[in-house]
Length: 401
Ligand SMILES: Nc1nc2c(c(=O)[nH]1)N[C@H]1C(S)=C(S)[C@@H](COP(=O)(O)O)O[C@H]1N2
Ligand SMILES: [Mo]
Image (cartoon, rainbow, N blue to C red):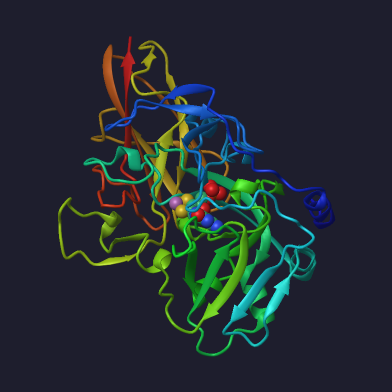
């Protein structure tokens, strides 16, 4: 996609965020504390079939079968999560401005044209995963969106380096953090608007990107059109959508969404015991490895005669996938799988294995990702009161007959 084409298509017209009507069908999605099923919806603009978690503000989950089709999650089925409901229905791309202000030498107010023409374009494939992905599997149950495993997606992001834009404004000595805000507003006047901050060093690492395209097309409105922050390797809460304001701070950001919400226990895998007190909490940050089987379901019948083909996806979190191993005895013995094409260290990576399951009966299949930093998924589930960072080794039972 050329820059000119992007500007043209972005300028072609506004996108309406209609009010979705009732969902059409249900999908089975059993979670330990319920529900057993969820409605499906096709009523959101630029979106295909999605699992409806909530209409306003929208929470839409990607159906599991999408992850079997390839490592890039199509824009039309990329999950959606918003905190506040007053989201613009349309964006006037000719009037849109991104402001950069605060502890800088020169404030900037950039049109989309300024941004696309004024800075080098960069591309990177990265997983965007909600901190609370898979929260519905937490036991004991925790409050919050009861996601299954579909609050994640992988895309090729195109944009400009945040560093280049910060350098154009000239960050002043004494700057500490950079705070990001989008165009939506809270529903109640005195509620805190959604904002997130990164340290100045992180913001200037050359990887953090202001993205204007996703999988080669403009962003769907509900995924942040026209601009969103991409923070490779970090949880999606930092990936601010409809990005319109960047503020360089000379003191730590006191705002609710950075300081209070989205904190985790400062322990391995953010793990603590229910009811435990005095745990040190820190802002959520880097992702940790995960892996999933995508072609077979729990309880599925397979043939004892032939090899059983197993495949799925894995990601390393803040580092590449080093190995994906599979077990047919619930995690006692492991064998390596074959890894498919490497799309970069922050991407989903497909893996495959052919299993021999010669004895009739039940096999507990487990899959485990180890990342390039040597961090492997644990065999027991982590727990914390917000339901963040689930990454236990996933298992499924196959019935050999
Ligand atoms: N402006 C804005 N950006 C936001 C949010 C939001 O509420 N408002 N939610 C964040 C959270 S918590 C998640 S999980 C991701 C979801 O990105 P997606 O909807 O494109 O999948 O957006 C992040 N960026
Ligand atoms: Mo999230």
